[in-house]
Length: 366
Ligand SMILES: [Mg+2]
Image 1 (cartoon, rainbow, N blue to C red):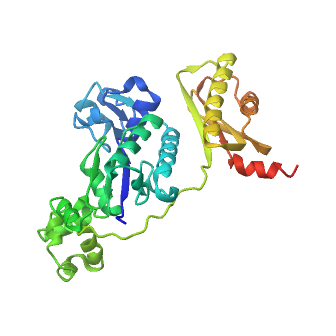
Image 2 (tube, rainbow, N blue to C red):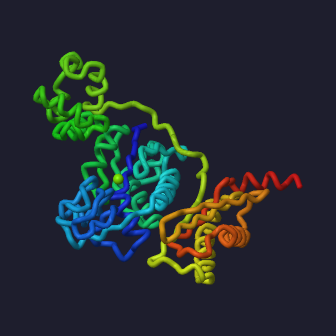
């Protein structure tokens, strides 16, 4: 059977989370994740830039002051890493529905490989399967991604990089097609070839993957030494690594934070309680949709001065009871918060998760 691997990469991940999940009003605008540039006087770097911001020449790693000069209208958001972790978990969960054996090879927070050698048989073509995955990711997480499809992981990753955002790129399966696809690309398109290796190759006049294809391992040896066989194989599109799942069997926690647009006064108790209830409701829905129960509840409070506290409480038996979650969260909040301080952010997390089915077996004993 023809082997097929997909590499799925979220497009402008951090910026997209801000645009499509946290601040929907920013969709279509130039958005940078990074500190306020203070009209060019601000410090720090851009951690991620939306495609709209990239059109102005803004890229990640650039000082925010320079990004401001390139596009004074760009919107800068601080970003909360827990939102990215949450989006990443949802993304990986979707991929596990499509990967053979539910296996997902996570490469980073926003990219992963799945093997679809078996799964692709249910679709008219590998490309139509890729488009369905793209649609599912978009519908369920609101985020855009690009997909590369090839006979192995190395080539699939290169394929993804050639068309973004919302790209689907198929390479192969014939080895000669794979080689022809790789030939014109810069050596740095290969995952594992960084600037140091690229510089060394360039000193010998080698810039494209095709130039390596025309060499033997013996000819590469004086330049690459022990890395020669590896580079020769990757340049020729050869990679027989099996796809091994490297993710957690079960997610460790589910959390949801809410940052207030303006710090909330300490005596706005009704509003603060309502916020906690609404957060708990979101978590309860996620627990139900994943058939999970929790045992530990954690409440996070960030004050106007950015000081942050987290307090937890565990209950004796795992449950998916949503009203208990609410009661425990409110109790922790009332007991632990400083009643003199304005509040900037509230968060609730459930952890010590168990699958609901496993729990049913335990309660059968009682
Ligand atoms: Mg990405």
